[in-house]
Image 1 (cartoon, one colour):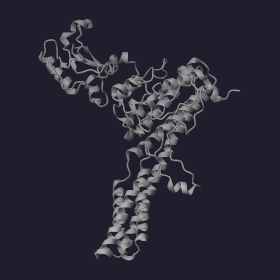
Image 2 (cartoon, helix red, strand yellow):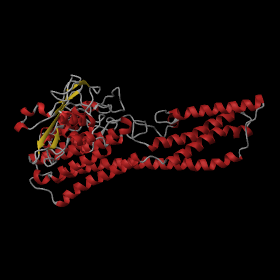
Image 3 (cartoon, rainbow, N blue to C red):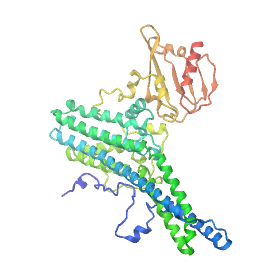
Image 4 (cartoon, one colour):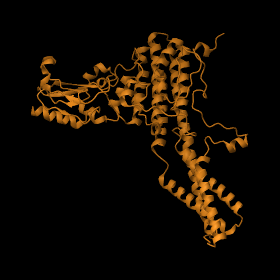
Length: 524
């Protein structure tokens, strides 16, 4: 008999195989716990321990060898220890509470993804029509993309990777994010959640027997739970630990710890015992401070941080298996290819297609970090758009690039939203089309975002062609000024205008460049 993993075309992934190496330890092995360095604060605390021990030795030597007594009684120092203990314990408790809350909300978000797809499959299980299969596949794909985008948002401070650059998005989805939210990372999942809700609502057109309203609301509830968990996660990411408490606790720790040798050397005359005590007291108090630092921000690449992408990949595999269970291996293969076409750009993990057996977990040279890509590469590093769009037929943000010219997005609006760091075309072409209004003025302007990221060799500068230079080539004599990236290195404001070398070779046009072109065209 064939097991599900065999029929599915690859081994069923385990949590360990699909995740980065975490901090593992055996609590029964006392010696191993004491000597393990991975995930430990020893490497960070050891310099403080050594420095304080050296300071203790100097104070002891000055007192007993040179007769210079810098010590003082420990009464005042004992009084400060009570305040210090309160601050250190309070900071550690708050940091651990934040750490546990972040893990809880992350699990809640992933649970919502699993529940959404499994309920959608269960509700439509007896509908085997092609429309139902496409609907289930698109719900699963948009759920995967939404979770992957949230992971990118959470790890942005470490990876520096904008949410719209992840390779799991199609070009249309990247265009939608760029035109809607630009570089506002935390808003990207809101747009994708809207697309997911639209896909769910399209069951009335895709299924032969549409859902009862209660079932539909149930699916929407899972999306709402996911968004609620995402808002809690962004609250933790955007709201750091209160700085006054951090400053006070760290100030008290350092002052108290490094003044401790002056107090203990006053009463202790045995140097080895004094050094031993100072070393481990320093380790205890400074170590608790570093533990709080580790727990305060669990999203990143540190040993004790959450492996968000690894956990998300396990969710992806669960969704592939769910699709395989209802629609077969072909549908699961198609879904995986629609998500993992450019999987080589993921963080330290490469995956073979479903049709290939065996594990494909490899560590790259940049293991533990995303690949930071320029905007030009990130735009073209996209999965292929699905053949049938489900729930997106009425979305103005998800129209084809070929129909972008008919949209209401103006060139000035686009330039104001996007900066050169968000969009970096190499030799791209921007087509600007102006249509006359009822009074004859050129009032409507639209932009082809696909043209901005057109695949071409890295180019040089840009040039502006005057409306008069190509009016004869446009339909009905309508002037169509163009802004084109070329390799000429000159800025040509028109056929009869001046030509000068551009100092912004290879960079996108700025708003002031369009303003200059407008003034020159008027003067011509």
